[in-house]
Amino acid sequence: MLNRPVHAPSQTRSFGFTLIELLVVISIIALLISILLPALGQARKSSRAIVCGSIMKQIGTWVMTYAADSNGILPTHGDTGWSATWVDTSPTKWYDKAMSAGLYNGWGEDSPIKCPEAWTQVSPLRDPSYNFTYGINQYMGGRRDYGSGRIAPLPRLEIVDSRGYIYGESRATWYSAPRNYFDFHPVLSLSNSATANSNWPWCWPNPDIEVSGHPGNNGNFLYGDGHVSRLTADAFAGMTSDERKNFLYTFY
Image 1 (cartoon, rainbow, N blue to C red):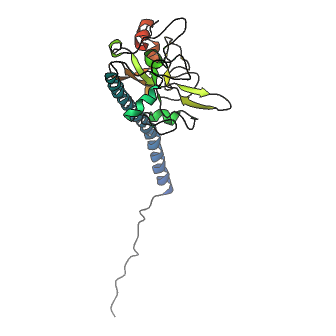
Image 2 (image 1 turned 30 degrees about the horizontal axis):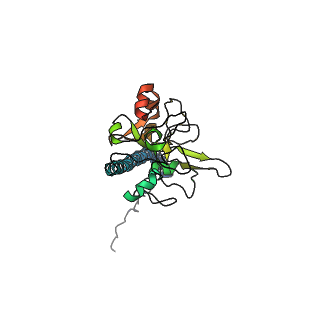
Image 3 (image 1 turned 180 degrees about the vertical axis):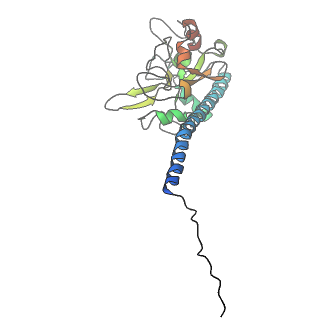
C-alpha cells in the first residue's frame, strides 16, 4: 500500500488593516488636511489679490490712454445727481467713460473691473449693482466742489506723480433698511485721517463691514505715474500728515 504524504494545513495571512491601524491612518490624514487647508486658502487669497492688481493695471492703461486723447486731462466723475462732482465739466460718470475701452458693460451687467476677493467677501450685495469694485480718488477727479469756496484742480497728467493714488479699491457702502445691502461706491473718499472709518477701502478694517480683506490688510492702488502698488491700513495710518496729503492729492 502506498503511503500518501501528509501535508500540514496551510496558514494564510491576512493583509488587511486592523481597526487601530485604520484609525491611525485616518488621524494622520485629518492632521495633514488641517495643516494644508489654511495654507491653500491663503494661497487662493494671494492669487486673487494678484488678479485684483492686474485689473487695476488695466484701469491704469485706460486712464493714460484717455488722458492722451483728452489733452492730458484725466477721467473725471460727473454725476448729474451729485452737484459736487465734475458734472459741469463732463456729465458722465467715470465708469461710463470706461465703457468704450471694454472695462464696463453698464448697470447690472457683468464687468471686468471686479476684484474677485471683494466679490467673494462683501455680502449681501445689491442685485443688480454697479458691478465694479474700484473707486476714483475724490481729490483727483472724483469731486470738484468741497464747499467754502474749495474747488479741486482739474486732474491733469502734469500734476500727478508716483506718490499719490488716482484709483483704489472702493469703499463698501451700506444701504440700511428696508434695503439692507452693500454696494461699492464709485468715489473713494479717503481723507487725511489715521482713524478707521467707513470711507476706507472695503479691504481695510473699518466699522461698517466685517471682512478679512486681502492678506495682510493690503489694498491695491493705482498711482499717478501708472504703477500699481499695495498699501496696508497700518502703513496709511503710520504716514505723517504731509505724507498722507501727497498720497491723497489733498489740495487744502
